[in-house]
Image (cartoon, rainbow, N blue to C red; front, side, top):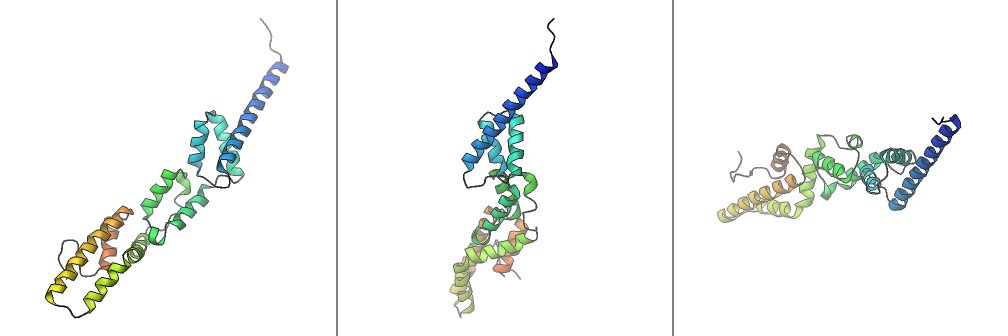
Length: 199
């Protein structure tokens, strides 16, 4: 039997370490070139490295290296998305979370960036006022003027139609049924979706 010397074992390990280091460097260069000046979530970078067929241990090393160097910062990206989705772009907390997960932001980076649960109601109110400002203004001017019975009926019908349209819109932005009802009751008092005036 051939004896394996300690030198040959050492040479074998150093050759493997060298290949591993070269693969890690190649992975880093590939990702950094792909990123350019933009920043992408860790999930997208991970997918890219997998598509390039890097071994999992190399991928792990590349990801750690990129995080240490600031090329990957999911918390910052999550905060940016929350800032972008305000005003007319507002979404519920649940919708924001799903958006970030779909974009590849790490799950542990999302909760610190999300607004408080109680902010959903305020966001829904602001969204209604920004999205439906013209309709709300028209309804307000109709209801404040002296109107005939037929006109009153038209205003109530328009209010109910706006209630339903606004409710569907808020639902599409991920707001819960209870938040939608509270927000609509605040913005369109005295009207509900059934067509009955509220007492």
